[in-house]
Length: 86
Image (tube, rainbow, N blue to C red; front, side):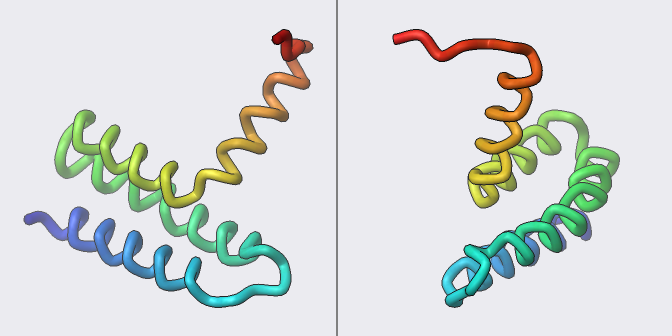
């Protein structure tokens, strides 16, 4: 196992531990820190292990930080003018 994957596993463990602790701001401050650390780490994982492993690391990070991804998707849809139709 490469150093980048070990660091990614430690990031995932820290993210899950931080999510289990109570927070007054619904964990947004912690999410910002995790994103700030996770993006360069994702680049390092992709550089060291290739794009497929980088994609799986991205999917794992998105599953942990799903609300920032959901809000980003809503923002992009609003900027593009896409309407929700039933």
